[in-house]
Each structure stands twice: as structure tokens, then as C-alpha cells.
Amino acid sequence: MIPMKQLLQTFYGFILLFSILSCGDKVDQAQADSLAADSLKKKMVNISDFKKMFEGSIDNKFQIVMSLTKAGKQLSGKYAYTSVGSPTKVSGTIDEFGMISLSEYSDAGTILGTFSGKYEANGISGTWTKANGDKSLDFYLNEKIKTINDAAATCNEVEFSNEEGNGTKTTCLFNDYKTVSTGYVNEDGGMYWSYELFQKKNEKYVKVQNTALFNLDQDELLKLINERIKRDFTAYASAPDTKECFSEVRTIPTYKMNDLGIYFSGDEINFTVELGLPDFCASVGGVTVSFKISDIAQYLN
Image (cartoon, rainbow, N blue to C red; front, side, top):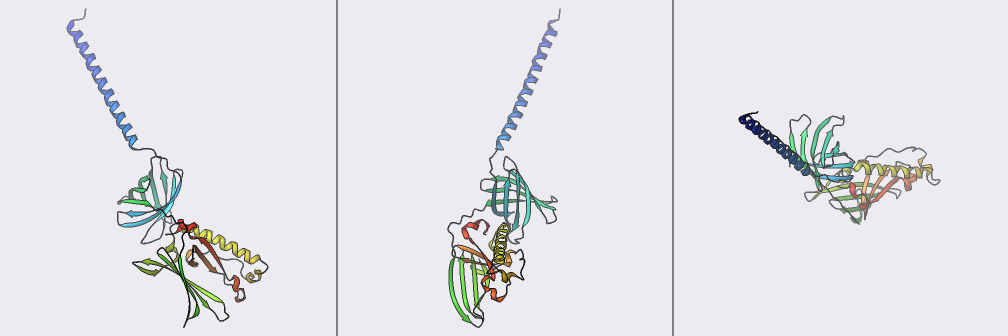
């Protein structure tokens, strides 16, 4: 027969063990509840593929612009400091919670830094970190929405006669930009043209290069322009009435944005190049490619 004292010790032992096990269950449940709460904070979002422009700053000091394309979980694009204008390639990923990681690369493919942050409905915010990790700065980017419907420039044309000659000057204003197209009458009655682009800065128009009119995606627009120039060149070079003019011009270069003459005319923007043809071919001496301003709004600054 087991003594009463031993039975009581065994009973209290079971009670203690049950209490410990119960406490463990409560701790495990608390940890599970905490993990569930953390996962709820990271709410899954449905982000459609996009191509967008953003503008913002790093450390609230360095103004930047960024072009980003999302395809699935992949991000690619470029960004630039507005004071410099030279774009840098970026690529990375975005997850189902909107968390992004973007690396920026030098021309040689070396990682220069990383943007880590959260994509929201109106932009991105987070931290930029230098590649060697010795500097981290906050950044933010707001989506740059550009809607231009039925856009048109205001133009004024005047005739002139001065020591430089006589001809026609057309000035067109659109947003913060101005184009000046000057046509000079030459000795045989033909015209030759010069084109200038100006940007309003501090209430004054300052002459700028063509690239200043367009954003980081301007290479896409330039590709379209070159394709249409070459299409027209091929058509002229093979047409019975004009092919003689192209007997010594077999190919044309791929033009850069600053190689082109640019001018507004009403609701259009025009890009023109001279082909260097003989004087008797003045009627096809150049090629002009035109777009509705509203159709290329996505490329305009």
C-alpha cells in the first residue's frame, strides 16, 4: 500500500506538470498570434504591370527623376539627378506586398547603390544605400502624371530684312519652352533654316539643347523618329521623280536628339534633318517627322 504522503506528492507533481504544459501552450499561441499580426501588417496588394515616371529627392536635397517599368516581379528603368541629367540604369524586383529593391549600375555594370522601399498608390519611399554600405539616405518618389489633351503651341510669324538677309521667323510657345525657326532666303530664291530651343528659367528664356525638352524615355521617341526618317529617305531614293537626287547618298546616319531641328506648329511638334543633297534637289533636301503633341506627351518634360 502506497503511503498517503507519497500519493499527495505524485498528485501535486501532475498538477505542476500540467501547469507548465499549459503555460507553454499559451506562449506558443501568443507567438503565433504575434506572427499573424505581423503578416497582416504586410498586406498583399495587386499591382498591375506599368510604365511610369517619378520625381522626388534623396535626403530632401538631391532632386531626381526616375523612369520605371514593371513586368511581373521585375523592375527596370533609369534615373538621373536633375542637376546633372545623365541617366543611370536601375533594375530590381517588387514583391506581392509592394516592397521594392532596385540596384543602380555604372556603364561597366558595377553596382553603385540600392534603393529599398515600399511602392504605394502615389509613389515610392524608402532608403538609398551606397554600394559599400557607408552611407544610407532616405528617398521619396512621387508619380509624375502628365495628361495633355488637345495641346497646342501659340505661334507668331514675322518677316524680316536685316544685315543677315531676309526671310521669316516663327516663334512658338508651349508650356515652359519656346522654339524659334528662322528661314533665310538665299540667292536663288530658296530657303535655308535654323532652329533654336529655349526653356524658361527664372522668368527668362535660356537656350538649351533638344534633350532638355524630353524625359528619361526620350530614346524610345528618338528610335521612332529615326525609323520614320529612314522610311521617308527610302521612299524618296526609290521614287522616279527624286531618285536621281540620291545617286550619291546611299545611306543616312542614325541621328541623335541634338542633331535634329525641332519646332512647334499648332498642335504638332516637328523634327527635321537636312540630307545634304545637291542644290537642284531643294524640294527633297530634308526630311521632317511630325507628331501630335498629345501623342508624345509621355516623353515630354
